[in-house]
Image (cartoon, rainbow, N blue to C red; front, top):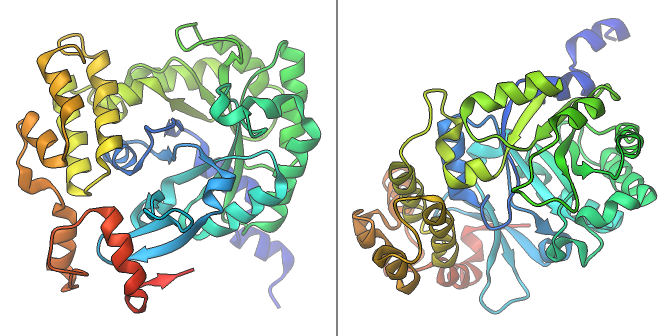
Amino acid sequence: HTPRGILERVLPQPQNMAAEFYTGKNILAPMVRVCTMPTRILAAEYGADIVYSEEIIDRRLLMCKRVENPTWGTIDYVDTESQSGNIIFRTFPEERDRLVLQLGTGDAARALQCAMLVAKDVSAIDINMGCPLKFSTSSGAGSALLKKPETIRDILTTLRRNLPSDVHVTCKIRLMATVEETVVLARTIEACGVSAFAVHGRYVSQRPRDPAHWDLVKQVVGSVSCPVIANGDVFEYADFEKLRSETGAAGAMCARGAMWNQSIFRKEGLLQPRENLKALLTKCLEWRHPLKNTKYLLREMLIKDKDSGLETEEGRALNKSETLQDVAKLFNLQESLVGAKERQLVAATGLKRPCDATIHDEEQIEEVSRQRSSLRVE
């Protein structure tokens, strides 16, 4: 038998694993409709250490089946209750070690069901406790949780008690009405055994244009021992270290800056907006990303770009685009980029396409349902 002391030195302890995972890290914050797979891939290529998914509501995820999709080399969470077979969440094995799935939930049992469904594909499960939008709060999730410490305790302890030890459990909060209230909440969260938690340095009532309160985040960081991730007003690469330094936080998280230009994660500095836009669009085309979300991601960039915008001829043409090929042509990219990742996988592995025709994701799911023998469904 291995002596206990030796075993403790050999096997990483949870708190050490958490410190290693979060300390000194530059992190892509969860953003609805933004943190889909193309954004996460590009942010990571530029240097993001940890990437969050967009918030996914628990009831929606529970309608999904996990499908290993050999056509794309992805893991697809497919809505089995809709006729269209929508992909609610898509990932791929190579991003598992940096991926955090953010869950919108107000119920411990549903949270655990969702977490167990995705646990093998992510490094952490994060509970959204900060979003003030009705999208989250209507189901008792998001900032609605901030005033429900017993529910918070129930959700976090249930997850930590039941999930594998290598899956981190975290949450993301906003500032309470007073520092004292925020500290009480932070200590409640820490006592649940979380690996870390993130603090958005704004009150629920504040809008993004209001300055983040780094000084208040610092007080929260000083009140706990577990790693804290600071979030708010990171607009260039140097701000990551500045935020960590001024708050004492383990990690620094970026939202809007990364939505407008994912190259914020580059040590070398920001790329020109148009260069970054084309880089993100290339990811969308290669992975045959849904047209609707592709257009949304580009619109957010064009709105911010002072030299462009949605009221320009280009912006209006984007809104009218009906296919990914239309979008590629609009931004002077090769239409042949559409579906390139699929073709690369076929060339590398010799896998055959489900059918010979060029198809979209919705059609692929229908084909998958007829060819279950070639897929592993859980």
